[in-house]
Image (cartoon, rainbow, N blue to C red; front, top):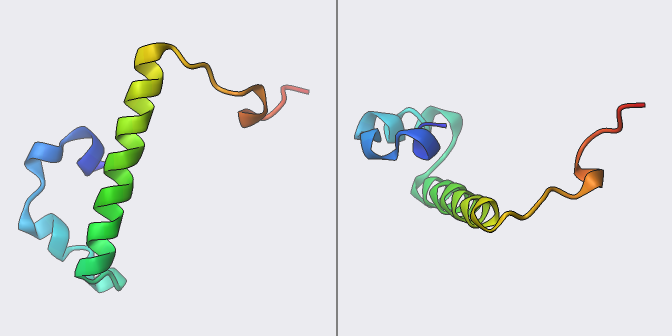
Length: 61
């Protein structure tokens, strides 16, 4: 969440907090890449007005 909303505020302590959860440098790098790409694609889709697919949301039945 912090990487998405407050990326400029990421500090070494944020990275270090991931290590006790079993993430090494490669896993942290992978997570950063996935979050960054998802944020990019979402912003492009929002910017060009792409609508969600109907089956992406639970039915209201």
